Length: 531
Ligand code: KIV
Ligand code: ZN
Image 1: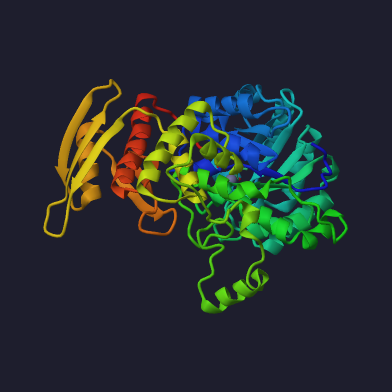
Image 2: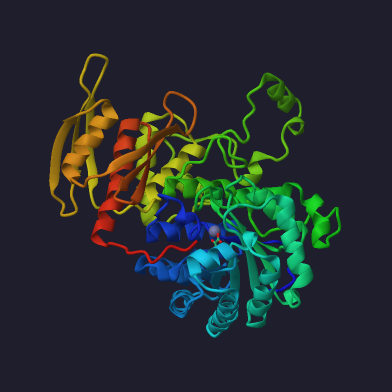
């Protein structure tokens, strides 16, 4: 990658740092689905995982490298600690990609050196140099991160970066690992690096930051003004603790305010040329996909992709928007791919109409996926007169999500009411194809269904989150259920959509239980977690 890019490079770490969010665990198929969508979104680099962490992580990085890392696709990257075995495993995992990157890191703050690494500065300096050179022996594209740079002594940071660049790092990434800095401090840190690292013109300056004080996006934008050209971010801002900088917020800030940022990139102020390679119309769909597959819901007032981000509630605002959208809107919802909620299909619509609308919405389904989604569409169209684009997206996300199909829900039936004891009967098919029926009484219908399912599946777990959201307005709306359950120290999510929210609740629970069941059969022993 050119060391002086004229635009901002987007490095997506949803599948690595994002997946480190408590409970956001994804299986390999889900990671692959997200990686394909990230490629459609137009990210420059996908950090696909931390290959050394477990055989499952290795396999995910390697599959993504092979099927998404095409010549005209994104660079595929694996994280690696500054250790030979980590770096070698990362190199092995990315080797199927046309363009592969190794991202190696070691902490540089005194607090990390003293308590975590138990090494002195000279040892860290030597390791950074040696491990970057080792990574370089596998690939030309090497990124180096001094972890906790935000709390490191700047003079020591300059020395480490200079050595890393001299050893072959083509990108130096500056992480605010604990989300401690303010925008002006982060900007000054980047300026200091630009002014004091003698060989800095041989590398791209990247930034990485966590949102502990809610400042990650603001910090990055200040970093751009001071010379950063690569932004490490995640979809919906998911990630460790309070998350990472949100991709959609950064991209839309750089898009909507491009004339403000143009001069910092040496462009004519009036230039309309986009500052990133992102296809903004893919943003909303990517956000929904990540939220569905990770089970991490997007708060309604979240910038750009929250349900209320384009809604106008107050009468004064509604009146203004009706007269001229620009009175209260700084961007058009269509820019992020939010279509008008048009009624597009009904129960008489055929397969071709269904397929072509999905294509217009950007979904390329395999024949098998299309068949499954069409059957669901027909079932829903029987119950719901008008099917909108949003309904179609819910159907597709539901049908093509990659929960393993171990236990299958055949039937769920409940009886409940004001003076009745909520009772549920369920019929499931187990992985051997045997039909199993059970019933239970609960505090409410969903509780009764979950208790009945538990009697059949018999894997102890704790339900820690249950939410229902309606996809569209109206009494016949599709309800989308997202649940998360805990087994020992692991959290599994499930998602399902249906006009019948009891059926959706049952299916979401089965989807999560299937993931849990699968993990019990293939225990994954994660190596010491990365930062
Ligand atoms: O937050 C952090 O410091 C990281 C590094 C590994 C880049 O995630
Ligand atoms: Zn991080």
